[in-house]
Image (cartoon, rainbow, N blue to C red; front, side, top):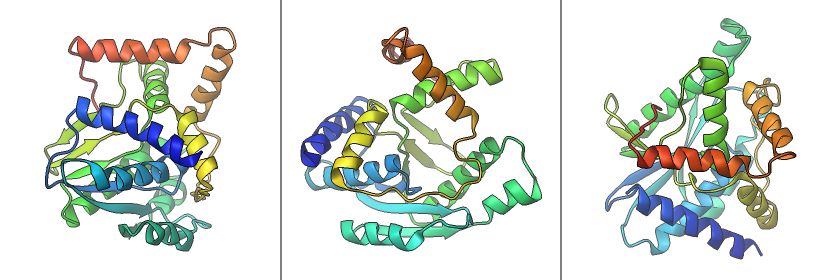
Length: 243
């Protein structure tokens, strides 16, 4: 069953990769791996894609350790070794800065910015020209609503983003994949996600938006499809949302 689900994921990954020209011959791609279900599933997918995709590319898994207590790095390393994938763990004090020094009431924005900077710099140091993130279709929808509700602007993830400051290209191969597909694959595969140890888990604005969408879907089960379709049509018509 897990292999069937993997093939379904791979079909959508390949479509996204080809629709947005995400991978070229000779790419060295750093996969941002937090240890959560999404990034682990992306790593499994890209490792499998690497075996048969006509364009040849290298992979290295990059984990930014935030300094949270309880983050089980040895278990994550076991997963890397089981896949025979090159990996790098970058130690940081991001958690201490966010929670102890800055004492952020809404820590996610600062933490996210610092993590992105750390992974971009680490990828550059490791000789990567691209970084793959595991943002899926639900993330795209939730980010759009977060931006509308809390920032008063229309903004969400782009499938591909070039960062001229670091000369790194960000790719999001899961852009066509629903979160429930990822969860099903992880469950059937018997993969155990690694808890981040973050103090804000389950208390964020993103968590609130996720719960709000679940509530709205009780009255209109097509809400996610409608929002995703609107984003797709906007891109076709020339809208290029900022990162």
